[in-house]
Amino acid sequence: MSDQKVVDTYLETLFSSELKVKKFMKVAGAVIMRINEDERKQVLLIRRSVDDHWPLHYEFPRGKCDKPVGEKLLRCLRREAKEETGLDIIPLKFIDKFSYIADKGTRKSTQYNFLCKLKSPNQKIKLSKEHDQFRWVGSVGEVELLVYPELKKTISKVLNVDEQIVNYPENELEDESIEE
Image 1 (tube, one colour):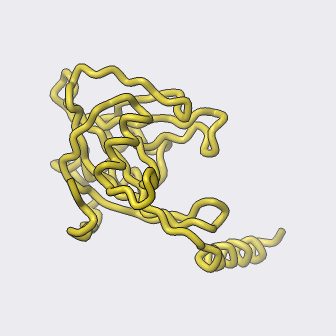
Image 2 (cartoon, rainbow, N blue to C red):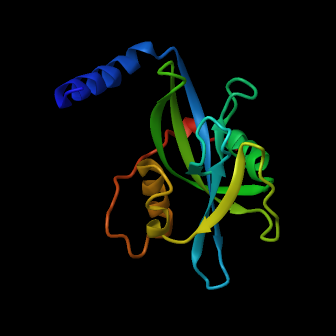
């Protein structure tokens, strides 16, 4: 296939995917932070199982806000963190959001990422069957090849606040979307 054909196919897929979208979904992402024994910030990443639909990809604990339909973001955030990691969390603040196309172009999801802390620092991680590994990361360099660029930006906003080289624009969340 020629280079031009590859580009044309990519552009056609990119622009036609918005036309196939039938469903819009909110997703809550828990950026769980802890302070390690060296007094450094760390963020929890979990890895999708080999038999999952996104095998071996690292991500934040996250999930669709659809149980029940129209589930509020913070309730969804706590539920998904508990289901995927066994951890009880306390949301601290909204960090950012990004959108992506899923389900073969039929669903557009917007993921809202929240900085969270552990309700109790002594909790043990108990991964769901969707995930097979976890790791605590302390720098953007550690995740360079582990996560997608959107997640790397979010991690940078949490871990590199004091020595940040790249500044990403603020991404405000509408007040009516946050509830307790």
